[in-house]
Image (tube, rainbow, N blue to C red; front, side, top):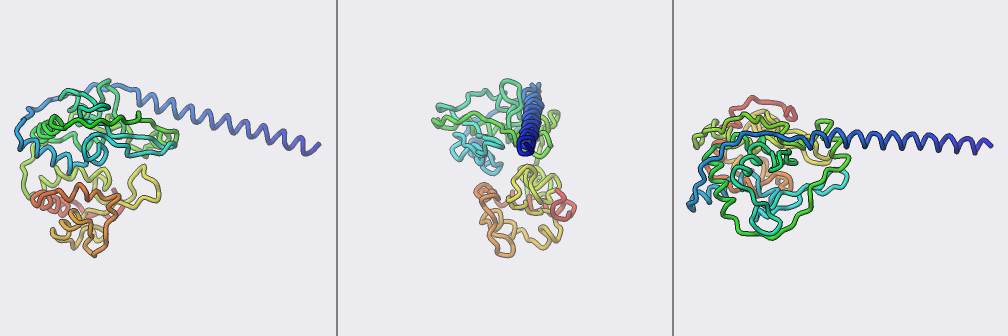
Length: 300
């Protein structure tokens, strides 16, 4: 009799717990879906797009050092870069005219790159548009010229999906899933003067801040698994780049070797992209990193 009553109550408790879990999952899905389905109006300025070989080369260089190939693949034919059923399955779009590729006009491309907004007006998923919103008109024009030049790559990619844990992390503010929510849509394109200056380094370093933080002090990257290594501190703090020379930074960016001779985790640090930075760009980054306020590691 006691056993029967115990089992009866255990069954009821289990049913209540199950209902609570289902209700939680339904709430998370509904709240995240509402935000994901929101549409955005973004005013777009389309720059003049050159067609000469030099412009295409500059655009290819930008696509490399700005990390486009990390998500869209070296041939820009797209690739899956997150594949975790509980979190998300996300692929960088095939940007070529091949089968499976998108065919977007320049206005739609600029809207996606600068604003993180897709053709239907919804936010793209995990597109780092906050790193591109201030891209200069000249650089944007060169980047578009490069995209126009891409040969077809036939590659069909699976649709992007966000799992229950990914949605929960998004609602908790741990994953910047929707770029259109965080981009300043009124940002005007920068007008950088290329050179080995801190100002030009600031412009280039927008590609670093997604991992190293707005203040460049590194630490745990929000939304990443706990076993991921911390991003390095790039400020002139003793826990960062204090004591580093420009040659030390150049070696780290091009060879993946730290000042103390330690090999960097190139599966996380994108040396395959940063090794293409030219001497002037590295000098500019060094000047900028030296100019920012020193912060203890992890202050983001």
